[in-house]
Amino acid sequence: MSGNRVAPENEENKYLTGSLVFAVFTAVLGFFQYGYCIGVINAPQKIIEHHYAEVLELVDKEPSTHHATKPPPTDIGKHPTITMLWSMSVAMFAVGGMISSFTVGWIGDKMGRVRALQLLNILAITGNVFLGVSKMSPHTHILIIIGRFITGLYCGIMSGIVPLYVGEIAPTPLRGALGTFHQLATVIGILISQVLGLNYLLGDKYKWPLLLSLSGFAAVLQLLLLFFCPESPRYLYIKVSKPEEATKSLMWLRGNYDPTKDLEEMEREKEEASKEKTISIWQLITSVTYRQPFLVAIMVHLAQQFSGINAIFYYSTDIFTEAGIEEPVYATIGVGAINTLFTVVALFLVEKAGRRILFLGGMFGMFVCTILMTVGLALLDRYVWMSYLSMVAIFVFVSVFELGPGPIPWFIVAELFSQGPRPAAVALAGFANWFSNFLVGMCFQYIAKFTGPYAFLIFAAMLAGFSCFIYFKVPETKGKSFEEIAEEFRRRKKESGRGPKAATELEHLGNNPNA
Image (tube, rainbow, N blue to C red; front, side, top):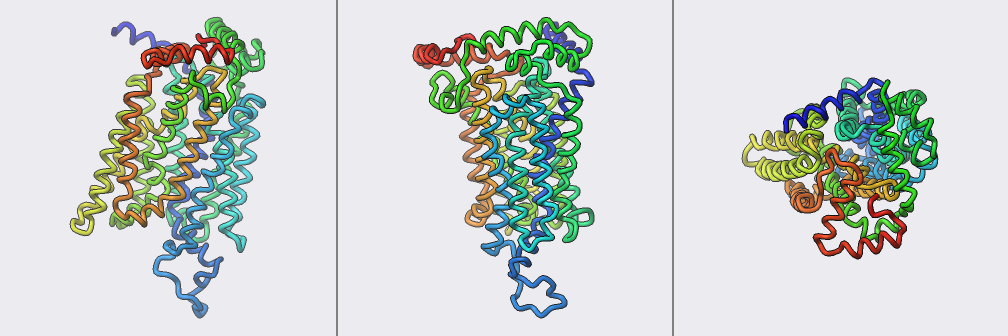
């Protein structure tokens, strides 16, 4: 067994070139923007809510020098209008992503992975312009909602194309490790947005528009760097039949090596894809053949979002305030730092421990943390030290999330499907992720007001259910080809007595059962 472990490590070292790292870095800048947009809305919440109240004339703009015609509420954030507008400001980012996620397959196939990302950055820059000028307008809330929506449109398509591109340029021994880089970029984006959101940096009442719009610089950087990145060799060979350009792309990515083996693999995949019709979204939803991998793809994304992680990212300052933490913004930054650290750990674990065990272990750890969090918040009035229990539970919650439930859903979908159904699967899984993201962002404030300290028990119940699903239904994909993964699902279908029906449908769709 030990002899078998040395070979993969040598393979990894052989394929990990500077060019490959550059291409992956450039691509995951999109996830840096995604993380920044998630985290940036947290720290300046109270300041922006108060500005909303000013432009809506719920409070006086300068109460210190003008006679107050309307007394300011004790907590303006609890005003129904401000609660609604703030929830929309948070959630419209997810609405944009939810809508655009359906176009991932079409845009990626029509334009190519690299050109699509280049054009998408125009959306990111436009959205950030709206955010940057929002304070100048008497309708600040409208411009912020529009800006968040447009940046969401960018992130919705990007979050499908980037894992697709990275998965296609990554050698099989590095597919999992490189697939977690997008999550590392996400958490770095969250952390940087939290640090810059400090009151003495960009989180004050004058500079918060710059804080909100700063990810536009990452969009410009990505746009420029993409001119130096090659198109996906798999896309060039299989989708547009350009073997010479695919060879050049492989040589650029892998250095001076013999590409024959990779080209032969792509030729086999192309032959299989030619026998396999492109599967529409409707066919994928209704197909018995793809039901198991489709269900897995959707459920891992729902598990990621309904774990409660974005309730922490969007509203951690509020949560720490409720827990009695004196300086909640620093606790929020601590969450971001822990988040980043454990994402780095996940880079080394994902190819060692495997996808399934990390995902399952992460979900179980988060379940325990939600229980501890609830206990801490519920008993805070009786025992002051319970605030520290809640804070530690949040830190551990975020840590175990990054070991599996954070990075794995984004790249496992591409591992579960061959070329025919993959675009539809990526689009639907992305939609599920963004839709659940929207529900959490829009509804958590209302749920927290209704349930008080017991809000996270809802997430605990969901985590328990998703953990059971992962244990019984999600296969291990570490180091396996698309064909091996498909064979695993076929084996499970036969064991459940549904193999013949699936085979009949495959034949009807014109697919090759070995694809």
